Amino acid sequence: MKALRNKYKKGMKLTTKMVILFFVIILVPLVAASITFIGFGYRENLDFIHELSSEDVMVGELINRRVLRHFEMLMFLTLVTISAVIMFWIRKDIYAPIKQIKTAMQNIADGNFECRLPETRDAEIGQLFGNYEQMRLRLKENAEEKVENERKQKELISNISHDLKTPITSIKGYIEGIMDGVANTPEKMDKYIKTIYNKANDMDRLINELTTYSGIDTNKIPYNFHILNISDYFSDCIEEIGLDLESKNIHLNYTNLAAPDTCVVADPEQMKKVINNIISNSVKYMGHDNGVIDISILEENESVKIELEDNGRGIAQKDIGNIFERFYRADASRNSMQGGSGIGLSIVKKIIEDHGGYVWATSKEGEGTCMHFILRKYIKSDDEVVF
Image 1 (spheres, rainbow, N blue to C red):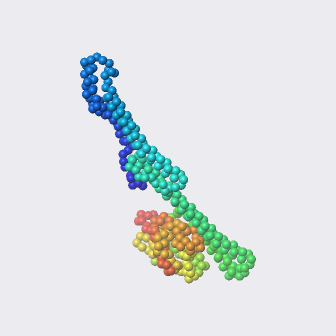
Image 2: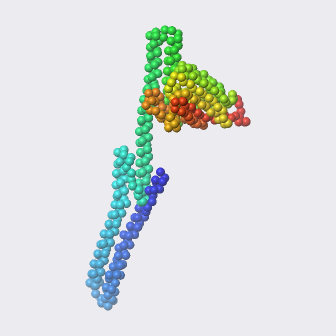
Image 3: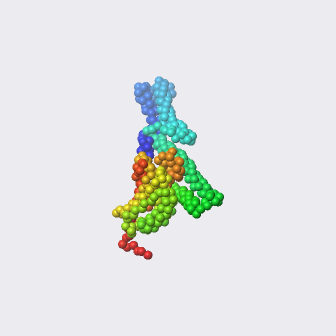
């Protein structure tokens, strides 16, 4: 924008041109008159002065009419020339640019942000054109962003409707089965209740995603940080996640290579969203019945690295760098059938970054995907007081 502004600042200022024009209007007639009297009428003027000194006659009768005709003609041509120059300058430097700006602004009012103004070397007009160009580019960018956001919002609503409708339909079906006596054995009843519970969890997860998503847009995600022991925290998470994955016939492996006293400063609820979103994404795009998810914790010098790897269908290399963007879909036709809000991994990225860490993914099509994220290790200072 600064380069654009400087590009339109070059050239003579209008005030400078007006000052020059003022002196031209004053000086040119004076110079013309002097040339007339000294040049065309020099000898006649000397005779005129001699006659005044030798003969006492009326001044009007002794005026040289030929000199007056020369002077009048020169003055007329001078004034015409000056007027033409003034009209040319006004038309070129004021009227024409104003007309261009008027046309351009009308295009902006009609929603056309493609109307550009030419570069000019006039200082004030150039700055005005430059300001218009900056405004046009910003309005165009805002309009395009608005259209894109509206498209994404519609897609989000569609995905949410799909995701809510699926578990609600299942819950209604299993409840009707219980009411009709279809679950007539303890085993069937247990299966129906577990399925209803899992579907309710899916709905709860989606609602939590929406709540977190609104917090991302307003940058007001609530955090309640605590010192968490990695081993204790993930042991509890694994126990809960394992029950859910077992009901979906997915095997869970857990490996903790960190020291037993390793801690991080984190919000336990928000970190739970991170784990659940990654696991949910792996389950959704597993692609086969023999699913396996491996969770590993590795301790590094000043950080803790958590890896969640699945044996799903993987992600193409061209898409791997974009999966943490909101609403991004690596395979729109395939993912649209899976549903999903499209914001799960963007929430993961936001929460991890707010914890001072970072997240990335590695994947190979047909073999699986691994999500990695880093959290800073909590190191107790020597003067810290423990209550």
